[in-house]
Length: 363
Image 1 (cartoon, helix red, strand yellow):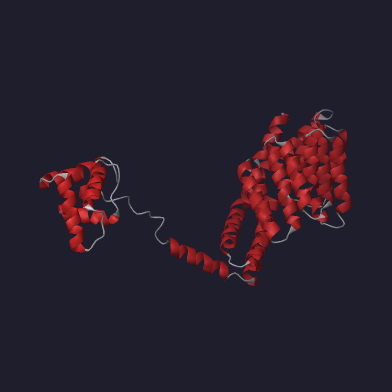
Image 2 (image 1 turned 180 degrees about the vertical axis):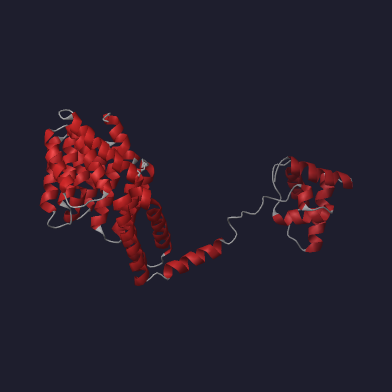
């Protein structure tokens, strides 16, 4: 330590011997010579002693030992014991070796098990959302991230990243549901990096779409537009269809109806090359038109609602968009969809959807 402890302890010990600082420096130099310890010369030691006694500096470890021997007191009694050892540092090397060994042990069988865990997490999320699958997905993402971080070969890392990428996309959607755009941004960024390293352009498209959605949630549509333009330059043609929903929503937020329609039309043409569900296209289209206040939003949203079983997140979003689209001309129908959306949002823990519905002020 530095300060009063050092000043009182060292100065008191020297005064008890009746030494001046110059004499104490000579005695310390002589003790060092007799023990073979390398120290500064007597003149320099006098300056150091002054600094130590005034609490301006803490003696180096070799000087702490010599001062303790010189004065017949422990470094603690002299007030120069130094800072306590960092408990986090203990065992750090062992923890790193263990992490490296665990990553090196990952093989095809382990990756298959992680893919199975992800499939189960997706099914849980479809039914229960963040409420039922949030902890499962977070634990899986953390485990995969740590393994990828310690993988020593590009091939080994890419195998883990291929599972991590879609898991992180799902984690991003869950954080959006929880109303935590900052954490959602982190998850989508991790998903984007993992997907690009694993050469999963389709998942990279989903990650970019998620990032754009986060920007829209924090009222930054211009930033979302710039991000999507950069993504289109980076991704191969078929994967760009994954951006369609975000492009349409961004254009709608900017009030550009023609661009919103163009984004959906482009995705419609690209569905033969990349797996994009028709129900998703209808949901994206309907959402964009609902944001624009266009009456044409209702038809694609009803088609999206009538599609084969979808995730509860999908259904809650469609009902919320229908509530928005119907609010002006059919307030009773809008209120019914709002109630259903709210019930579904509560079921999956989506505060994001509930806040959106609260803004509509529909019962």
